[in-house]
Amino acid sequence: MTGPDVTVVVAVHNTMPYLTACLESLVAQTLPPGRFEVVVVDDGSTDGGEAVLDDYAARHPGLFRVVHQRNSGGPAAPTNRALALARGRYVLFLGADDWLGDEALERLVTAADAWGSDVVVPKQVGVNGRLVPQGIFHASAESVGFADSALAWALSDTKLFRLDLVRRHGLCRDEGLKVFSDQPFTLEACLRAERVSVLADYDYYHLVLREDRGNVTERASVLDRLRGIAALQQVAADLAEPGEELDALRVRSFAWDVPRLLRDGFLLLDDDVQHRVCAEVGRLVDCFGAREVYHRLPVPDRLRLELAAAGRPEALRDLIRYEAAHGEPPAVVEGHRHYAGYPAFRDGQLGLPDELFLLRETAEAADPLPAPLNLAQQLWRGIVPEHLRRGLRRYPVWRRLANSVNGGRG
Image (cartoon, rainbow, N blue to C red; front, side):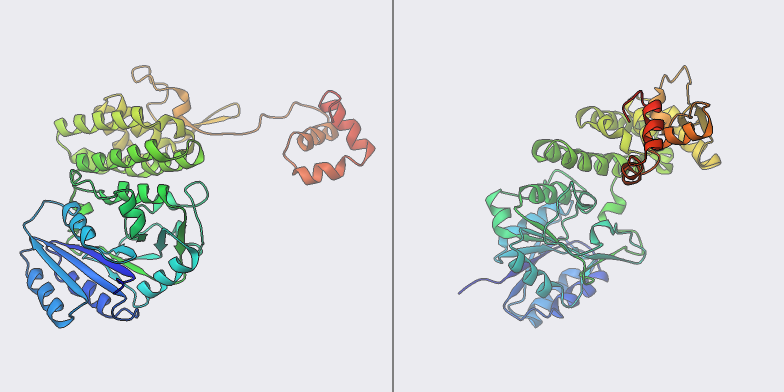
């Protein structure tokens, strides 16, 4: 007897009443019975969810397999246990807070089979105000990568994975991580996959923000989050191609994951924790090439990273308070360079280089030449598009003017 097409893995710990909607969405799937299974590991629930799971297994024999275990302290262990029991050709990880559109599994399996995909990223939508980056979902795509799409911003494990890929490379969650253990797993799977695809034609996966903000990622500590980010960046350093692929993954962490931990919430941490956070951020910056992508980061993010890396929590607190009170600082213009005029700009005590404050560079002001020659200078120095410059070269007057501006190299 052949196995199911897909195994849905659900790790559960005290997710009532959201668990019921999750389970109902699985019962409602249009993929025919027998073509999918649901493996649920209850990680020591005490909210009545354990009885609900047993009831669904009894009412839907052959669909749900339920395992109960003592609480492990995080989602990694129950997810790994459920994954080890999977029998499908594909596996989909579903949060016990979340739910699927009725046609989700059928559409995902059909696309993966048609395209030969190792990983399929289904369109996700937020519920109850849950923010879900939508860049990767602008269109369905048979094949995407980190260098040519927003895949770096979609690293949760809420995807369809070919089980053979997972087993062949021994992929599993790091049970030492209390949060973000899915991201290194997902990143390694995507980097090792022959083909990663995107389906954006249907609302497949509904990510729920619990009313009590009780989602695991919402209640994780800053230091736990930083450990998860470090694990992600280690996978990127080990497996990603240097250049655009690796840089895209660096930008993901250093333009979003790390700086967001150095905002208003940082002020609420104890002094000892602030120093520990700064030390961990400094390690991330030094070990994983953050400075190599500073030119792609907003100025406030560069400053947060450098102040933390320098072990200056007091200066970081000043920056956070300044932004809360004043918003965006005024620009300081020096020639063709525009800087963010924070109080720390050229502060001798902090010693931060000017480049950290650089907003943009504009073309140098044109020399005071007669109007026609000034216009020619603009044309040949790139202000006018290349296709227009090519056309103007046909006319002798413009050739002469361009030659005079460019030293005979018109």
